[in-house]
Every structure is written in C-alpha cells, then in structure tokens.
Image (cartoon, rainbow, N blue to C red; front, side):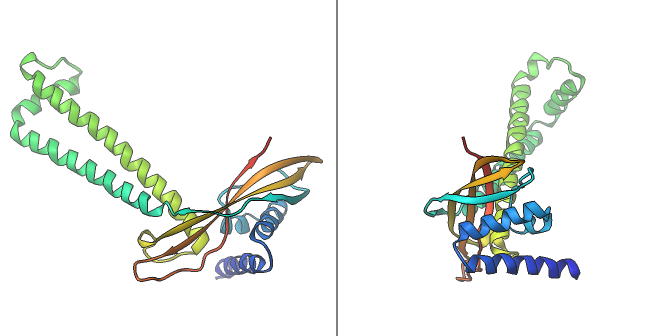
Length: 222
C-alpha cells in the first residue's frame, strides 16, 4: 500500500510540475533532481533512460517545436499479428507435407538427426523439408522481434498514459520534443539532447486517457 501511495504521489508531482510551466523545463528539472537524489522510483515513473553520472547542475539551453507523427503502436500491433500468422501458416504447410509423405520425411529427419547425407532418392523431399525448417527459424525470429518491439512501445505508452485496459486497441499521435540541456558533472559541463515523448491516443469508443511527457532518450551532443 505504501509503495502504491508513493507511486501515486510521484505521478501527481510530475503532473503538477508540468502544469506549472513549459514541459521541457519541468521534465528536465524533475529528471535531474531525481538523478541527483538517486531516486530510481521517481525516474522509473516517467523515464525510459537512466543518467549514470553524478549531477551538480543543469539548465535548458534550447528547445525545438513539438513534432507530431502517427503513434507507432497500431503498426507494431499489425506487424506482430502478421508475423505470428506467417509462422502459423508455415507450420501448417510443413505438417501437411509430412502427412502427404510420412515415410519419406521420417527417413529425411533420421538422416538429419545423425548428420548423415540424405539419399539421392530423397533429395527432393530433403530440400523441401530443409526449406520449411529454415523458413520456420526465420519466421520464429520475426515473431520474437516484432513482439519485443511491441512490448517496448507498450511500456512507453503506459509511462505516458498510465495503465489502461486493452492498450493495443488505442491509436492516435505521438508527440516528440527535443531539448538541449547543459549538464555539469564532476565540474565538467556537457551538452545533451533529451528526447521527450507524449502520446495523444484514444480507443475505438473515443475513450481518451490523460497523458504526460516522458523522457525517452538522452545522449551527449558534440
């Protein structure tokens, strides 16, 4: 219960800070204040990246206008479903082939298991079976890659809009803001580019969750 209340307090603090000024300044201040205090819980509530150095001071040097593009969630959901469908279709195809030539494929599999050469009389079946297996390996990787990409994006969306039911049913826009920040660590100043994200989404019934800016990336400049 205490952990939940603390998380709610953190979320309220971030939302309040954003309401009191420009998002770039407020998010930068919230982020580096948490870094300086070693407050990983606060960072984890609105940031996808950690800053590993000790921070002495920071300031916003420049902020670019917001960039608005279609949110990638819809395409990632589609890609994941298509990858799973392709995998299933290939599996059905090679099972059907096995049922058509069970004796020949048993011999091919036995030779493969032993590392022996496939008899020339079974070359056509052996080539076809290898083709199925190679394709399955490729498609299996595609399923894993698209699922990983979708899971990463869903985590980012949930940082911005919170935990909502059936997040895959939401669509809309992604807002990106790029901010140059001067950070001093161990007496040495360094400029960084901080990339902020915010999701403007709704589901098929028009339900539109509240959203906030999150820290997506942070990289040194120059």
